[in-house]
Amino acid sequence: MTHLTYTLSSLPHGRMSLASSLRTVRGLTGRAFLTAALLSVLTLTSHAQPSPGVFGPGPGCNLLPAPASVGATVDLSYFGPPPSENNPSLVGPVQLLKSGQVDLAKGTVTLPLYRGSMAGNGKAVWYILTEASDPEVASLLGLNFSAKLNFAGNGARTATFDSDNNLVFDRGTVDFKPARSVTPGSPSAPFPPSAAQPGSVGDQAYSPVVRVGNIYYNAPIVAFDVAAGDINFPSGNVDYTKAHDEILAIDTTAGTVTLQMVNGFSFGRPLWYISTDASLPDVAAIEGATYAPLMQALTTGRDDSFSSPVERLFIAVNGPSEGGCANPMRQGLFAALTDGHRPNNVFGGIPTIAPDYSPLWNGNLYEWTQDAVSKGYRGQLREEFQILTYVQGGVLTGPNGAKFGDSKFIVNCPVIQRLN
Image (tube, rainbow, N blue to C red):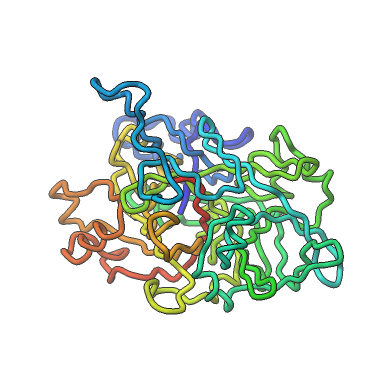
């Protein structure tokens, strides 16, 4: 899961400013003033696009590893063994989605943009490709291979090729006109948000998963029913009533789209990914993603079992948030809601680390117990089995002390880059 809201400095023009927020509580002093001011700020509704990227103002929001030359006795030219296709366990960085161009300085990825159409009415479908269920096709197109997509039939659309080899989709449309908004909860418990509206909404037949013949593809729609000239924003300033909220630039002449990437971890390694769709509307609003109702038909839980289409995504609810991005232990939804940056979620297996990768991530919310918080145990967690060990030891639970496990939603998060 990505960010939940925005810092005040990143609110779009025309939104309530900090000064105007404080004017609503003028006349108060001391603790009453601070409490009222915080309440006023936290109840602002935010829907800026795109969401904050991978480079934040402190170590808690910036996961790019330092070069080896930082070590006093390490020569500047040494960065560990190079990545290898034959031995992908070696030190990174490793670009996983090879069809894209990763900008390490900006934390963005530029992917090929495809144009298809809807069966019956011929409306334009603008989409990207990130995964395929066939390893040879995935290798040919530079996509991530995901064998688990073979079991995603319950939540998939279908498509066929027309005479020009463009995809014609049988069903599933997306409305990009809604204005995304997320209103945090209370200061002591900003999650769950008190209100949330996704900025793009699919109909009941929409899912990013598409079956073409016997192969399943992850093909998120990024614009729908618009002409090429209507969404041509090669230098930015994207019209988000016509395109996905996480797009930074879209060039219909060159056939490319540039997307914001997101920080995360998998088995202790930092990674960058994109977030495109979610199976529940409030999750989609939080993610800056498209609400994709058909994804909710996918089987969740039992991610290690035969026929599972998903992998687990571990999301802290009340991780360390004090100090915002300046806190190197920063993590979780409370942090994201209060400082506007990404929550630093933990993924299961990704390509090069495990063969059971799926871009369809089954959310597993976890919460630090009050006893763990009071004893100072709370910190940043970075890998699946560390989290499961803490669950077994009673340090972590599900939200509000419930049993830890499947939170019954899916987020489509294709992984782009392993940072080491």
